[in-house]
Length: 384
Ligand code: NDP
Ligand code: MG
Image (tube, rainbow, N blue to C red):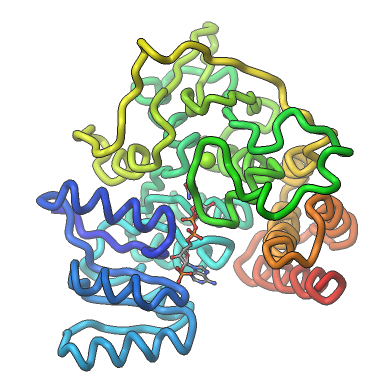
């Protein structure tokens, strides 16, 4: 039996993780959960799984859940805020922490979970983008395993199994290309929020769906891959593969390419991380090679989708630059989701912030939090 905590239990990854736990109910105990303000969903999860600890990061939602547990007579610890996330992530019984909150808010609880020696099933890519250096070195120091949940990174991780001793030539990170694949700048000037939210293959939370439409998601994943697999940026190649069947590949020194294929369903990478190193039966669908006709590949258009180019640049510059990129992007996506800025402004504002802010500082938790706030404040003040 493995004891699980899910940070962000009400989101797209969180609810699919719950589906995996339901399907493998003899293998897992749900010990802790968190959400921001989705009180009804949290109440449903509490009634079904009776976890030992809950955290809500919105104060009103925290009070509602506290009242609910008291009225129901549940012996459940209800916590508030970042401190609450840290408590859930470090609870004594927990073996694996699934980090599926959205945004850089995932960094602190992930670090706390690492310091407490928990295995991390990492969905929250922003954590590695803003402080990959710190997170990976703390994981190493504390002998903690970080298991990727992001589908591409899970595919790379699976393609690396049994090959520890062999030299990688490159990582081939696949990208669907998003809803605007093939479009040029002029076509993108008038796209609406609704257009951007229509991902062709994956059903995900709103922030990552917008990131997928700008290709920033792939940029964040390049930085994530750099840290997870200790791979130079020059050895990470993004390949647009619109069918999302090949989830990513590793090319070895001898030219052999090993890939992981599957349907576009996050339950497979989630359950691979939770069951690792075993493989277990899966609720998700399987590929049917009798109907699967074509797998195609393209090179990404870095002129039109400049966020991907900016992320490569930020990653190569290192230090606080990926954090600046991420903070500007989180602020811009939030503004775009509220119809406050245009689609193409996302890349422009991220670039503006990368030119404006000083990145040349050590990656400490304090410096990361401080530059993150500075950049967000600037973007919200100027563009809201
Ligand atoms: P969702 O928006 O669907 O869910 C986000 C979760 O985080 C919810 O539980 C939400 O609670 C909680 N949350 C939101 N804001 C805050 C906050 N300020 N503080 C604490 N918790 C908060 O996101 P996804 O599940 O799509 O994505 C989660 C992470 O996983 C992201 O980093 C994403 O990049 C990554 N990922 C997602 C994939 C997917 O298929 N969805 C694929 C690969 C990676 P509430 O419901 O109360 O708002
Ligand atoms: Mg991904």
